[in-house]
Image (tube, rainbow, N blue to C red; front, top):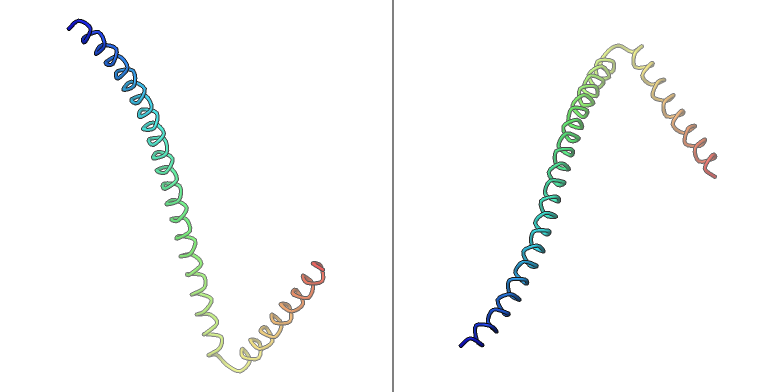
Length: 109
């Protein structure tokens, strides 16, 4: 019976050492997961603040465009002189666009 306890004690020691190794391995994995979770949390906070700033920028751009459309509509509905001015401005903008397009393509080639 003494031989059985001695052999059983060696197995217990091996199992105990294996359990400690597995516990340390598990502990390191949990630490890495915790670190990843904290990094993800920080990334989410950063992205939410970025999206909030984008939202306010889009709202200001929407307000600017709405005001521009209102002024444009008012100018179109006004008298003949403003329509001539609007036509000249539109033609000028189209010509400037094509001139810039030509210059950019010429510089790139």
